[in-house]
Amino acid sequence: MGEPVAVIGAGLVGCLASIALAKRGYKVTLFEYREDPRLTSTTDRNLRSINLAISARGISSLEYVDKDVCDRVLEGIIPMKGRMIHDTKGNQEAQNYGLFGECINSIDRAVLNSRLLNELDALENVEVKFGYKLVRINFGDIKQNCIFKTRQNAEESFEFDFVVGSDGAYSTVRAQMQHAVRMDYSQEYIDTCYIELYIPPAKTFNDDFRGPFSISPNHLHIWPRHNYMLIALANSDGSFTSTFFGPWSLVETLNSKSKIEQFFFANFPDAAHLMGLDHAVQAFLNHPKGALMCVECKPYHVPGGKAILIGDAAHSMVPFYGQGMNCGFEDIKVLMNLLDSQSPAEAFESYSQQRHKDLVAIIELAKANYKEMSHKVTSKAFLLRKKLDSI
Ligand code: FAD
Image (cartoon, rainbow, N blue to C red; front, top):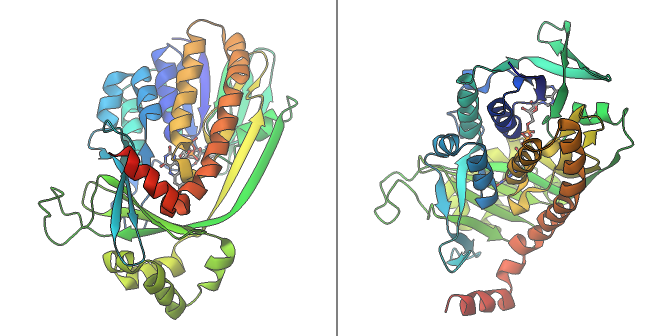
């Protein structure tokens, strides 16, 4: 079997990277500090529901890794051909993304992660180790010594030719790399909190939407209210995952049932009806309140082909452009393309040089798109331009 390599973090990006490396003959060990998500129930969407928009960027990267894998893991995705803007009176206005039916697609993150893990099970040169938390890396001249805390709180160490850090925004691989290279690094929280909400399936089958959907499944629904907004993406069972985004100062004042009810009545009356006001209130009070941050760093590698960062570990971005995962998948495409013609040392070096400007650009676009989604979509000029576009 090929050279032993470690991938740290079995999120979406780490799973796809493991598939891509295994296909190139590496002997991959994928470490994840959580337990296998397929062993815990993710069916109760009301408690925990996240879905993501996968775009052409992510799909073409999945196809690049393996067309059959792409087809299997994306089965049942729901195309969204445009935005649906909801005003405070409950009126809806569709704004198509393109003239030729271009769309992004809604997919359940937990389902996608489980399917990618299933694909890994079928590969004999990949071993997945759950319950292993990376705590330290000793970078050596030939081998990289990785030390993990196990679920029994014991320490175990393994040696690899190189390490791929796909361990998310708070990456331990990145922190360890910072001891070995002069890495520029920045982390910035934006003043926005997010709360996950839920719209249940309609009680009856809707012929227009060919399913138990209470609003169009083929649009990304937005309730733009200038400095805060609500969005919703469809799930295949007829429900919608909805997310509220707003400044922390606002969210912190919405701390009682009556204040939240008034807020929803004034701003999102139709959404409150779709969710059920009680659910909206309970979710607002009890669901976790997430912070949003951007991470930038440079370079993404340790010279000598010892380690490389991909996904959120390298470039956590705010979610308003729907490109975090898509970009993480594209990282894999770019990296594998380089590894096909260069040694790991050369490929990692080229990757850091080539990839940085694209990632900086997309992080900026993601920040800018908050204004677009929450505010500009309601401006007269924007609506007029959209109308002209569709003539
Ligand atoms: P993660 O998903 O964070 O996975 C990292 C993994 O590493 C985790 O499983 C973690 O347990 C593991 N780990 C961490 N530390 C260690 C350690 N020390 N040892 C071992 N394992 C470790 N992106 C899109 O493309 N489209 C969207 O529509 C979209 N919407 C979003 C909406 C919201 C509200 C948010 C917050 C994000 C959204 N994103 C979207 C971004 C997307 O979720 C992320 O970019 C993507 O999940 C990153 O994947 P990852 O595998 O790099 O990191």
